[in-house]
Length: 191
Image (cartoon, rainbow, N blue to C red; front, side, top):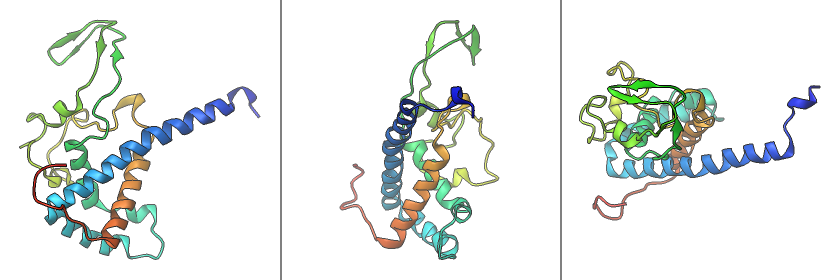
């Protein structure tokens, strides 16, 4: 065995903290806001109920394969992340070389930080960005710049837990749909 490349106890604790702290809050936020959107836009709740009945309940044991096929729920999760991204801020990055970012010159050593909410509501990337529309994510929709929607960041430092977060969210929302009927207390547009 390659002893030099083994994880130390400290490495294991650090990895656990990364998954636990970074994953718990953000996934919980995504699930909460998805349920909120289902009360605010009940027409999507009906669509998800039908998808759940046809895919999620087909087998006694839920498999990753059945969860992956839940396209309507996936679209709703994406639109929820566009409106209420779980990680609004990221850490600043330091430019390693001079380059252009669109029409803006970035010099080596400058600090830069992406503004997700501005990108997620930019009319250049999203038609009617102020409208909650999970249908925009359906297959065959408009081609989107791969860096216009990055709720889990992008590139080599993207979120290591993004696939787990989406799978967890799909399972929890599906279970919630099957076990509860939920509504907002009144129709005010408040959280």
